[in-house]
Every structure is written in structure tokens, then in C-alpha cells.
Length: 91
Image 1: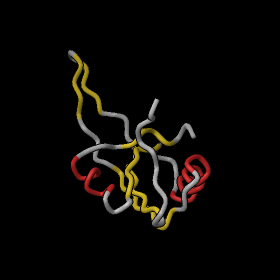
Image 2: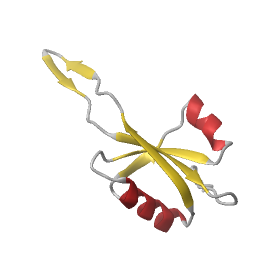
Image 3: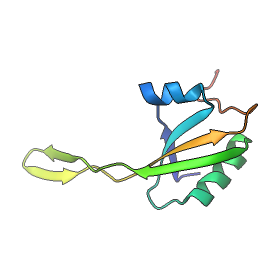
């Protein structure tokens, strides 16, 4: 479960929640089969489809040192109707 980062909440992903689609940032070396297995086991849901893409790297400058952000992959999963993922804990 360490390869799945965190849920992404932007204007677009909030609109996707109405279509029962969720977005996560994951480790760039994870593949769709691993991600599907982890999410189905951890959240107890059924996944219909997974779309993934690598985000472009961004240049960052700290003082005189110039570098790039850490690369990661973003996935959008579509769940079977009747299933949902709680993004916020109720505690």
C-alpha cells in the first residue's frame, strides 16, 4: 500500500466523483494490475476501468540549486455502481 500516494482533489476530480470515478497519485513504477489489486483489497470495491498518465516534471529552484520535482503517476479509477471510496475519515 506504500505505492499508492494520496487522493487528488481538484475541480476536475470533484466533478468526476459524480461519475463514480476517483483520482490518486501513485508511484511511477506501479502498473495498473498492481494498483487494481491494492485498491480492491484495501477499500473493498470493484473496479471497472483504470486510466493512468505520467504528469510532466516541473523545474524547482532552491537558492542556487536547480532541480526537478519527484516524478509520479496519476490514475483515475472507475468503480462499479453501488461502490464508493470514503476519501475523508469521519473521526
